[in-house]
Image (cartoon, rainbow, N blue to C red; front, side):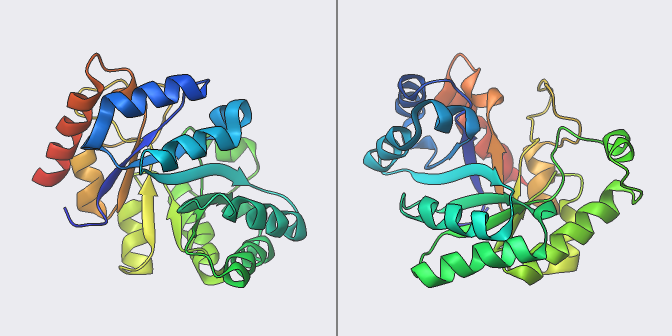
Length: 233
């Protein structure tokens, strides 16, 4: 592991109170937390204020997807929260990603934009239903390459595509990987998964992990066990 190999705990809980309790229990075992749609819609900026008050780093996972001007303005609003990572859908187009990157540059912000390639809850049959004729890996590679060229600082991708993306994109982009489950863990609604060790070996920089930590009887111990597996990789 190096300074870029980190766990990001997904705070997929319905309230700021539950999020705060989880953060306190995990303590200094994790420094990075993801706030997604459920929690942001429920308690919004209050959750971000809580995390900043605890000295935590913030990944705001809103997966923005709209016309370029709307996304540009939304990104500008999100930057005011001082978040470190912010997501948008790569499928929103090159112009949309470029507009978002322009908003970051104009603000002089250190926020990194992460483009979501294909959700880890999807597989090839889902692409087929959407009329996407390319194989999954080709679709992820095309979206990822386009997004980085348009100004995204990294990608959100499944662990099954991360090795190919790392080879194609080189060492610079952050590759943030959800769909990570410890050995023997329940995959839940994820379809493209891998263990923490495999994801790190393949080139992930950050692993987004929710239920295996939040659902554990001892959340801190669960996080530390996953960190140990990452180090062994």
